[in-house]
Image (tube, rainbow, N blue to C red):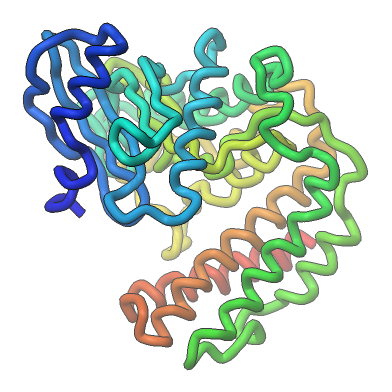
Length: 343
């Protein structure tokens, strides 16, 4: 929460740590929270005429929060010399001594998030918006071309059995919602058993391992202010080594769809390419086998629907906003209906 960030980030201690890294001198000035809450705090500040952005777990972090930050540090460091747009890592503290938690400093991103709004340049030109859609796909095409072994991430994820673990993991999460009083059970989701069985029966036999972001969609990228290109892919906390086509399936599933009231709302939307055009664009820029792309889209529908239904279950138990829970449940149902049409 905004009122707690000073408890989590001791500016004097941060200054001493930066002194030891040779990162300027003097007081830390104009600190302001860019984001914060139950998971991470993101603080921008200046020191010696240079701007920095600090990212660390919240004041009351989850048990694995520090390890998540350490993983982000690793992946951002590994991407330093690649053409993947990402926040540039300045320095990091995987240890927890300096601020009581792992943290890192990165360069500020000169850009905007399209889910918040568009600058006049982008809002006025459908041709720019079309290229923005393709730029999103280009980001994961570039990421998928990175040799994860060459950049030091050979042990960053367990690729053996990666696809085999997917359905069971999310089925277990769905079953766990039964602990919420008032949730009627998985029978409220059409075809949940059928979709899961289809995914198990039609799973691709092999895949080419690579880096995947893990939650890649329009809300997790920043666009350049001067054109349609990506300024940076952000929020790397779910990054791992696995099948990069998981990211593509996620893009195609989360891509806003005309006439779908549960979709992400982006205004103005005219000009953006269709999901089929995004797929064709990726195919031109990747050597990966896309013959089973429907499997990845169905898996993304399955996973996202289960994640959203979790909020619905918590809302029915009085642990989340009722209107949000109802909206998320409607989207869960729509996602399973979409999956059923694909299989």
